[in-house]
Image (cartoon, rainbow, N blue to C red; front, side, top):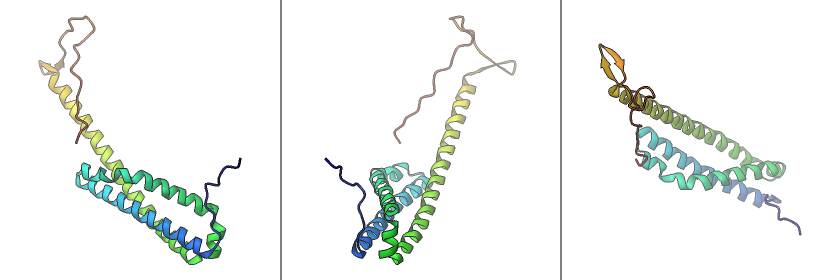
Length: 159
């Protein structure tokens, strides 16, 4: 029993036009989702930014599958629709810039949030350390294992 070929083959101009139009539409939809996500994170509206997360995964998967199909059919695309290939390249460059911006925004948000949590934990640790003659001091542990430990830092993950 033969397994079906998962890569669609482009056999004529109409197929090439249809494929490129579909890939451009997928890129446009994914670009819009990423732009909304970036704007929401920049503005601090995380719930709004994450609203499109459900659509991002299938769009990203369709985009990656489309790229693989384009690679597999590069010769046919160049032969049947060279002008559409150039439009696809230009759209891909624009899309790559949006992805790069999105990654930078997410990395910045992650760094900022990690810094806030770290400084909060340090501040809580300092507040729980008693001062004896101007130097930090720890109360003896009733269990004989060094200084008494502070309670753990607790966070709410719901925003």
